[in-house]
Amino acid sequence: MFEKAGGNLPRTAIQLSVMEVRRQPSEGDDGRGPKFLVHAPEELLRGRLRRLGEGIGRVVFASEHWVVKRDRSPSEMIALVLLWRAARRLERILPARFRFRFFTKPSTTLRILRVLTQLVVPALPRGVWYATHIREVWLTHYKREVRGKRLAGRHLTGTHLVPERIAFPPVRVAVGGWPGWLVVSEAIERVEATLEQRLTELSNAGRFDELELWLDRFLEMRLAGWQRGVFSVDAHLKNFGVTGDRVVIIDAGGLTDRWKDIEQRMDIEEATEEPHVRLGLGPLLASRPDIADRFNAQWKATVNLDEVRRHWPEASD
Image (cartoon, rainbow, N blue to C red; front, side):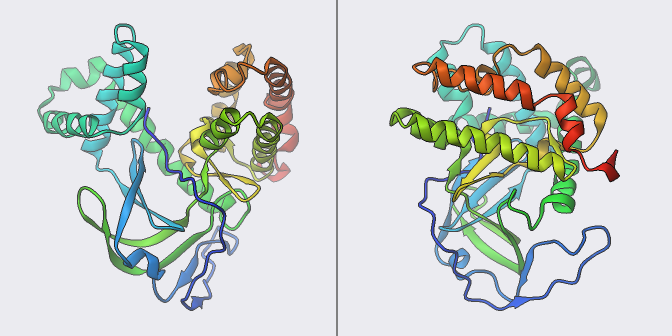
């Protein structure tokens, strides 16, 4: 529904003009974690960071090489859940072009609606909460966000599956739009593009051999995640980024290590006849049904319960 963080930058070496401090490993994270720096990267303090994207749980701002995030308040998240539910109902009556532009592209109009909805949230009667299941949707999303961040920190930090993460003493940075500034103590390497953006660019340019290569890398990245004991139940292309020749996870909210969640997801996968359509690749591969067929066959052969179990670390079973 909402645009994820991503950019269209060429790959460049990240230069840090600050001293690194050795991190003391904390219990349970095997010594992996963000690099701790004495000072924040200078580029975060120069000028105003650009608003790069937003999701239900956060708003993302970026400098040339780094991304910082503002977590949304519970009332903001609930307001967005309400708007999302309204959007699903309006899908039946709105023209497709208007629906796409209004609900998939962050806009001033959408942000105004979110603020107005947020003002109404405290006045909602308890009956509305339970009749519309708003509270359940919000709690589910919140719990997934917390669990996903915990799993990413425990299993993926310091690996090739996620962007580099750094930590530093709290600093105040200027950002575009509201609230105008943030206090941050952590930043994440900015990816060149989301996987969806990269595949769209390659399709528009007719570079289908490269597009198919990135689809192969996407599947390889999923296997590598399973080998580390994490599974994404929300494998939308916007949740993954491209950096160099790697596909990386940029939104950990869908990560789980619970077999109940994985089995439920696999029930959906088994019932899906054309995975490329569900992933949003239908329009991109409309002129290349051969690639769509190969990808669907490879997805079905890879994303199934037997393969997940085969790649899952034995100690986690």
